[in-house]
Image (cartoon, rainbow, N blue to C red):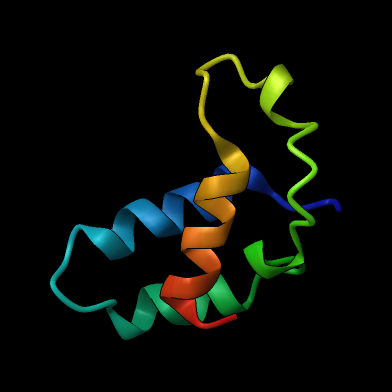
Length: 68
């Protein structure tokens, strides 16, 4: 889906470090060419992740957090 997974994760981590999502983080996230809501949940990326992250679950949580 051409999602920059590292950047999505970065913005998710930054946003969840605060009680409320900072507007600056939300704007940077929304400026991404492809956001987490475009993830189709196929989990194909997870077998290639060197850190063992459950990426599809993280994409779903990120899309819900940012509302897009």
